[in-house]
Amino acid sequence: MDYANHDVILFMGYDPQVNAARGENPEAKIGVVDVRPPTLKEARGADFLVANGPEMTAMGARLFNHSFEYPIYPEVPPRNHAPSGKDRIIICYHGNKAHAVSMFPHVTRALEELSREYPLELRIIYNVESLGPIPDRYLPGADVKTRIVQWHSEVYTQELAEADIGIVPDLTPIHAPEKTKRICAPRDREFGAQATEVLARYKPTSNPGRILAFSQHGIPVVADSFPSAAQIIRNGENGFLANDAFSWYQGLRNLCVDPEYRQTLGQALKEEHAKRYTIEAINRRFVNFCRGLQPRHEAPESLANAQSLFEERDRSDETLKKVIAQKMKKFFP
Image (tube, rainbow, N blue to C red; front, top):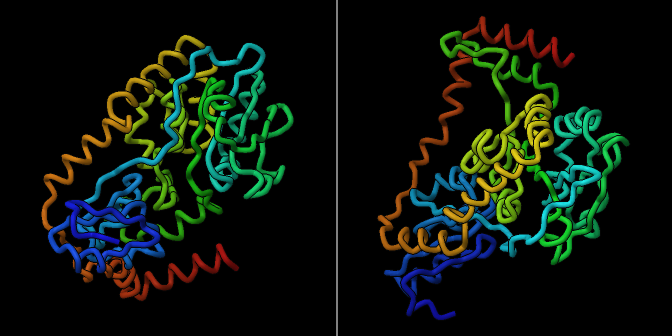
């Protein structure tokens, strides 16, 4: 590969040939695209990261002080027909199997309750042939008509384009969250830990791509509250953020009650997409980013002990150690 005659060189995260490019062209700006946790260290020495969302930006901060967020999503022509929802309100998911399963239990319970008021059809689009079927126990009850759709190249202008509402579940369920909050809470009262605090788990590769497939069509979205979604969704303006069954139910119901309101929020999301998330708009920002790039700087390795400092402080107090032991025995006999 000839690296000599380029100002900017990009590598995919799974095969970052940073040292080879740097040796041949020391002046080039080198970026690594869509790096994953297993290959993060191999990207060391690049000048910047091209992340698909703020989650990946945070993950890469150990090595990169500069990150450009370039969301990856299917670019599709907008629909030219009204959504099909005369008999049932069509609620659509598209993505991978893992996030589809993550609808259980908070999204599935919300859908079950909502189906008592409105006839619903849930469409779940993913690569069934490659990833296998979703077990019935993770799907909503029989009152929600559920249709599993095998992903195909035209799905974004066909099955997805007919949707009335898009859903983007992303959070990984947490086992026994109330017990978990008590066990992992700081023992020092100065932190002001409360039982009402929210625990959230999401992947460092979470991104806004699934939202942007719906936004091109003007389909309003209800999404789990994770960083990428919070950058785009504004509650009550172009969709809703949710993090439990109650907020999912309310967000979905708000969009079911009034078709005009649903259309208004969908149009607002479409306008947000046209303003910031078209390929042309993202590319313009990326060019400006490359032109203004400052020298790279890795974070000091000493920061790796930040969490251990907290844990050591807990362990330093014998009384607190006894409290922790008692709690562990109570919750995990």
